[in-house]
Image (cartoon, rainbow, N blue to C red; front, side, top):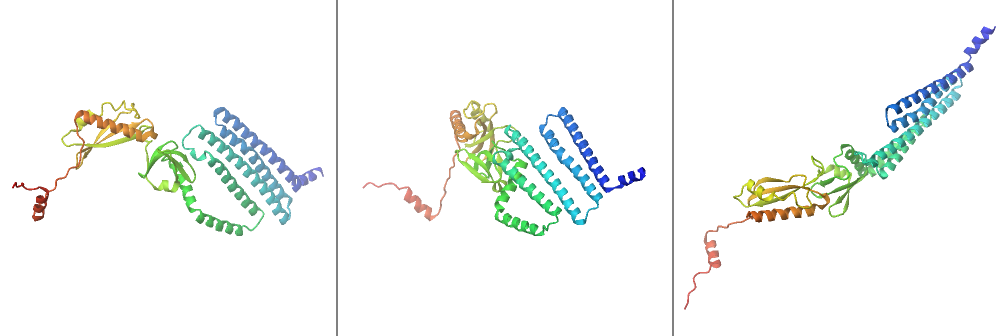
Length: 369
């Protein structure tokens, strides 16, 4: 009799449900303990606080998920009615969605805080999380997680989401058409940050029309401070479609300046180099540690064209550097007796019109009466 009662007890849905719940609690505790051990080992092997914090955030959702799975199994053992079973399943699914959405929001917060710390320390490639951009990212992530969680909850409770999907599609199409310029700037900003053709602090020239220092790379526009002290906001879409010359890139972190000039025919490049290059290293506004170079660019109609290539000490003083370099070129050429090239033209005229013109311009001999 006792064995029969024990067998009935083991096969009863209530006992199986209680046993499943206890098993789920034990399994959840074991998983939580295993994660805690992994955290301890990670803390002993690495100094990355972000990894440890993300692992810690995953402990509770994993434990709750294990308990929810056990409760679902226990509910199936109870053989509830269809309506009650649907409500029970929807309630458990809602709890899982809420727990995981909360954990993901906290994980995104931790990642943003870590990125802000690295950006404030000057690490390249993280300009997109500075200033108001971090708050915008945080807001957008929360909205996406909220909408995704709301959609899952509606599906779990059997609500009709087709009307909501249609409304969301129409609203997205309207917003996309109305904000197509802003979306283009946003996509260009992603490419600028990912491809990194320029960074904050670089001196760039945009399509031979503008030159200045990059002060900020935003989601909509990039700010450039020109040499005249004027801040210009360029839309990212326009910046991505134009040619950008990054003057701060290259083998040297310096701005290269090329001052062109032309000398008269009959001079050799070696003679011009010997006259111009001495003394360039000591000029103000220029970097003396980077050697200057005199390049022969070829002949022209007026003379021989050269370019003196130097490096600016302060990129914002480009006009002053050009003035100092050109003044040195003029003094050096004058001291060496080398003349600058100039354009000259000879006019040859013939025929009756030329004879009449010559008679009018050159008076004949005067007669004395």
